[in-house]
Amino acid sequence: MEGYYTATELYALTKRRMKQAKGTTYRTVTLNVQLDLNGNKKSPDLLPVKLLFSSSTKQRKENWVVFLSTDVNLCTEQIFEIYALRWSIEVYFKEIKQHFGFLSSQTGNYTVHYASIHLCAIRYILVAHRMLVSGESFGAVRNKITKQLELLTFAKLLWELFKALIYGVLDALKNEIPKSTIDLIKCKITTSITDFLDSVLQLDERYMENELKAEAMGVL
Image 1 (cartoon, rainbow, N blue to C red):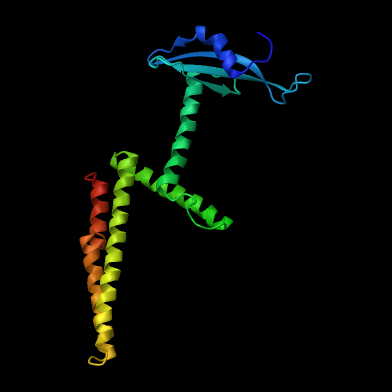
Image 2 (cartoon, helix red, strand yellow):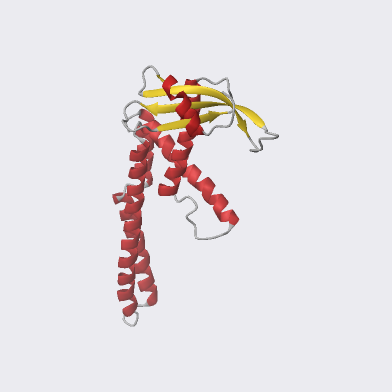
């Protein structure tokens, strides 16, 4: 079969040779061809490639895909395995764009974007590590951490509101109460509330230490 063909034309010529792979719901056929890299028919720059055509047996409507491999010695299973690795990269970028703030900084500074890429990768690795340790799905771990961060953010904002109201009342009494006493009261309130929030949100050092011990024992 010589001449120039599009992928659609090659599929039409070879689809009758497609066979269902064992243990799958897909029909496949491979074809070794030469790809013209410059498109000049008079002096073509030909590269040997392998095309893998695949279609689902479950779909009534004719849908198919084609995979191109520059290694013509790869078998069908190897091509699918390599594509599966490529797909995991796509999932990674989708995940960090939607949930980890990838390039969300409102700036055109190269250094900021460079740092954002690495910080997103670190966040993703930490969640992936937690997933492997806990046995939960990636989404479950990510959602749990997200909810914890949302709780911390809400508690912090709520405290800032109450603090502004309390400090406003205390400042209004500066003519009746010495400034040193007011500052002492503010400091005591801040310390007490901070300790309370750390304890309620289970962020105190004792809790974190006990959680690490429990994880090491396999309890969590």
